[in-house]
Image (tube, rainbow, N blue to C red; front, side, top):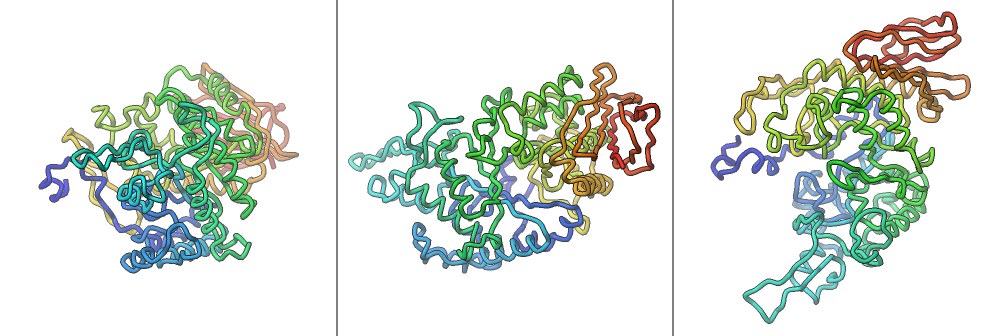
Amino acid sequence: MDPWAAAAGLDFYGSVYFRRYGGDLQGVMDRLDYLQDLGVSALYLNPVNDAPSLHKYDARDYRHIDRNFGPDPRGDETRMAAEDPVDPATWGWTAADSLFLALVREVHRRGMRVIVDYSWNHTGTAFWAWRDVLERQRASRYADWYEIERFDDPTTPDTNEFAYRGWVGVKSLPEWRKVGRPEGATRGAIEGNLVPGVRDLVFNVTRRWLDPNGDGDPSDGVDGFRLDVAEVVPLGFWRDYRRFVRSINPEAYLVGEVWWESWPDRMYDPAPWLRGDVFDAVMNYRWYVPTRSFLAGALPGLTASRYVAHLDSLTAGIGPSQQRAMMNLTASHDTPRFGTSVYNLGRYKYHANPREDPGYRIDRPDQRSRRIQELILVQQFTYIGAPHIWNGDEVGMWGADDPDERKPMLWADLSYDNETTHPFGRPRHRDRVVPDTALFRVYRDLIALRKQQLRLFVDGKLTWLLTDDARGLLVYERVLGDRRAIVAFNASAEPHEVSVAADGTYRAAYPAGDVVTVAGGALRAVLPPREARVWIRD
């Protein structure tokens, strides 16, 4: 516990959200060699807009990069104050903005792309328009921008009647006002739009980052947007937004956060957002839940055949291009870390922390969990969709749900204290905090394999070849023309032989190994417990 927190009477969870570790854009720039060595093709940045919190979803200003991510916070504050926030003609470039654009240039020079994160549903209470509403109430020029339920009555100075809607009831995140929605509808695949003033602001900020110098060439801008809590913003806005974005950069990637319809039991069917007129993809938590259940045994009873049926059901109503673009993720800033989520079995993202589950394990995941991670990673990198890595998972970082999964990145050239304490004083292992270099190599090898066979793993047809419920075996192929990959999994605790029809000669692509000769029209191999294999036809 930090001494200042103890003096204030705060426990771990009351103080951790106030911690800051000094991360900035220069730090990202300095680690691009690491990311390039890993093999990533795009960086998805959580919000970098100006905001007071650690997570930045409580925007103070959309149009500028957070002042503390650049070299001159005080100077940036002065520059921002001199602008008219609704007039793009007055918007300049702060030191943080300029550093961000330099980062984009360098990322592009290395052949990678940049995706940024915005919430067009709400702001923070420090946002300039919200502050004006608080001060001027009905007289504010932004009075119709927010979901105001009741303004303060100036005739009752001793009572504040002001009431408004915050995202999921969180009053520190006041929501933008939506119009044209069905009566009583606030979330899901509903029609409607944002009020014109907000819509114009959002479009102006979007244009600014897609084509910073305004010359019609978007190569100096960001390459797409991850769009927060997309299911609470009406479809009419998202259609307009897609048309606007694509008018500036026809290749821009739009991925929506479309998640819980009824937590923790049911996720939204994303099909209404994936018909070609809204998003290119969504964050595909729906892929990870059954994959974790089958390959990690998180929920007993999900056999190989039931797993296949579940995956097949997820593609209903979703076109091939959207399936290929889906953001397949094993963890994010909103979930337990990958290793921790397979170390703790049971329902996904349910009581996934020691506050709600006293038995939830927050120490370094064991070797069984490590083997399961590799098993799932093989599926992630050979299945349909775009693999996503939550930064730090590739070096074995661990942590429960928010805030534990947001620890500072683990770097090999820095020394870290051992993890020895539990937030509630319970016994725990003493864990050394060092990068898992073997796991890093797994990620790097799988990324390299995917890049070497990119068209096969992106466009290749997927066919299930074997589902053996009794032995926990699953085999599928990816085929594109005369190119073929066979991917086999043993989810059980015992070694088993697999045999699938094949012709020609195959090489062991993961783990890399010798040539495999097919005999009698079949490829046969013994899979060790909880391991996977990838064979490529030569």
